[in-house]
Amino acid sequence: MSESRKPDAPLPTLYLPHGGGPCFFMEWPAGLAGAWDPLAAWLRGLAASLPSAPKAIVVVSAHWEAPRPTVTARPDPPLIYDYSGFPPHTYELRYAAPGAPAIAARVQSLLRAAGIPAAADEQRGFDHGVFVPFLLVAPNADIPIVQLSLVDDLDAAAHIAIGRALEPLRHEGVLLVGSGMSYHNLGAFMRPGASPGAEPFDNWLHETLTADAGARQARLAAWDQAPGARLAHPREEHLLPLMVAAGAAPSDPGVRTFHDRIWGTPISGYQFG
Image 1 (cartoon, rainbow, N blue to C red):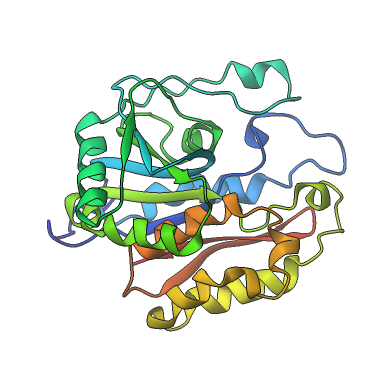
Image 2: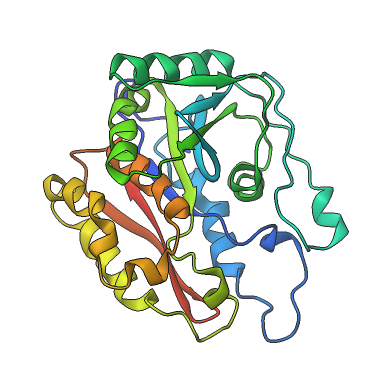
């Protein structure tokens, strides 16, 4: 990574597709093998694309919902194997990145200063929306990570506001990452070639995120009016981490940094700033 970034230059924010369960760490049957390889390669290259190494990472995962934004606050977070039906060895994956209680406290402080109630969980660890992709993004597990929950009302505008409140972290050497999937209709996704709504919604998402940043917030807040929206996301938990990432970069246009078809379905990742 380059060390030329000025100390006060903000880090970008990221929205990454985290795959399906432990998809990068298992053998797939013939006809399905290799589908996740381009995404895995992109995740492995993310760290090198940053202007400098972050001192800590805050990850908003699709797999944790709470009544208010809640952060992991223990220094040694365990792993939560919150997937089922996968090979036994995928429940033995290890990712020993330390927590960052001071960063967790900073997140709470920023949210409360913006009038957003916040909480900490001193017991919870990292779910697979964190450890599965970060085994590829930062395999040495040497960067402290704090996980931030979604709010269980799943309100898009509220999650954009959460991101906006956390924008100062970008100037403090903290990388903010939304971890989800740009298409998350699992029943359709697991039937290759049958992904209703995927194409129109992916096109709308690209247009929305790469156009004028000033118009982005209103379009994202009304995401469910987009073409194919509820077909692509019957439930929006995998899209809301994007709202936080975009909200934390209110003046920065988005750039699509990953785009591929996985089993025929378009899947995208983005960077802001």
